[in-house]
Length: 322
Image (cartoon, rainbow, N blue to C red; front, top):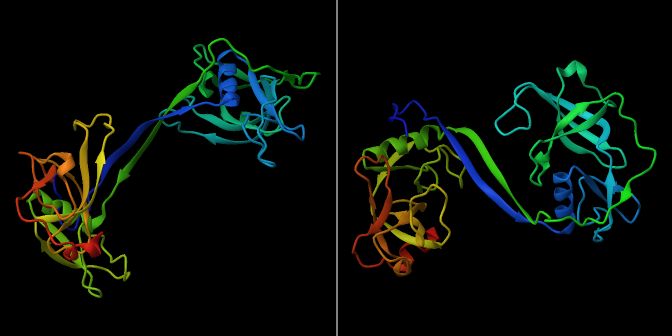
């Protein structure tokens, strides 16, 4: 975290949220992705005779289960497009390209992908395109590297052909990485809160109407809708109101499972905040447990909370903060 700024200057910092999304595939999606690995594009035919590409497992109109797979052509027509002058990390191409919806020959719906074109002047609705296959294919939508212009691509004379969907070593599941990069600005109220934590103090803001003290402060009362300007220092000790036991280890987080994450009502605060509980076996954490923050040697905010040894708080003292 950057050094604490003056109270009038709000903090800003880059933040990345990233996790792998793992899912199993049903027979239709398995056949579609395995087909891409084998340079074959499959759709699914509905009871009304429409061919959907990408295929879905249930009819979007009747909700009936769909299993009638058909093979469509690797050529198609652009139905609409948008130019992307500045590709982002993880996008199909590293140079400017067009996002296009392509209705493949034999399909009745369009597939979203990238079109490799020299500039927006080279793209138009109705243009003919062809799939460029990735050199290394694993059974994912990225097996289609992109589309390329192909004015000579003629639509096949025959319609989509039935396909069994049977493959050697079919793809049964995928891992799709999800990532969000953005700049987080906590605002002036929370900037003051973070600056106070660096001095091992906890500061909230009091609502002038309902008189609740919000920690962390939000700059406005979420109940009354009025600005909160009065700063109030609250106690460092607090009470566990509710908690959960975490049993799944997070990537890049050096904390052994199981551990406890809790809502903690600090003394004098009108709102509970989040914190990890340590210094006690996970199965001994309980509602009403009295805790205090623990800073690391060079930490600017509490690393976790530990029991203080005080008697448990009476339920009536924190029941409104659950």
